[in-house]
Length: 387
Image 1: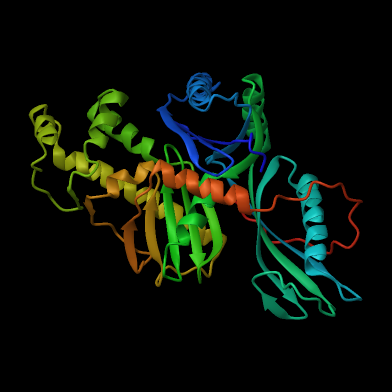
Image 2 (image 1 turned 90 degrees about the horizontal axis):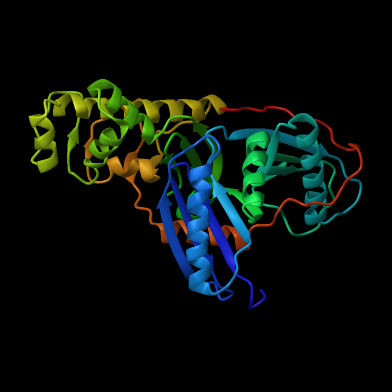
């Protein structure tokens, strides 16, 4: 890496912007964040982005132009595709795989032209009826080879609109990643368990990521998140959204019990003040509980719909994302029809988030960009699913 080069990473959240700069020695030189108000033209977002970039430039004494962008749109789209080929001679798998990726890129452009590929994940490859979960490095006489892929895509129209805004603000997006996918891969390395899932609750989006035998398997998103809890509180108690958000956040780390039965009032001073304002604490807690239950149920149902054989019985569930803060030190008695082995809260930090993105950026190969001829050996594709 050129010593003058910096890696600038922007995490584009719909309610919060995070920005970090790493130098050529991979030392973090800047870390900052800013809450934002979502507007249809993202004007508030880019006002805050420009401010935080200027602070970073002042800190590192360098002009910032190129960035790595990560985001989690609520319309994330997942495609499962199989490509089967026949070979008549010994070949290097890396070469075969590279050519297949080029065909895959062309296939998506032809049949899913309203989407843009963000991540391509090899689920498994089958060589002469033998299953491999990673590409073999040695050469073999191959009669038949089949690749099963899962592809994470973003809506192309929405993404192009956002990228054009970055361009207008003199920022060049070098790479784009799905935040939930990237950070879950990194967090998974810390676990000594085989089967687990992450439930990443964002502002108006929740993403469920499933691992089986320590291997990433599935990802799905639903357009419901923590802001829907705020909206529920605002509507039911006829109070402004800003007040509803404060009430919701007052429960963070409050050691409160949420259950479907009647609850006693908490010792929390702020909650006592709400009681004095004729806001029923018991009703308030049930509003929060019901919405969290719905977020969990819809997310897991969405994932199961993409794989009918999916079973969570021996799976441990971890809540992540800023919208999961309610589940940190509080106790929730949920209806667990999915029979998870355990349900836990995973503590995230901005430093850990950017460490995961940096690791992925440095260690992941990008999809080949070289042009290819019209489809020839591509045999078939099947089994696509969305949220």
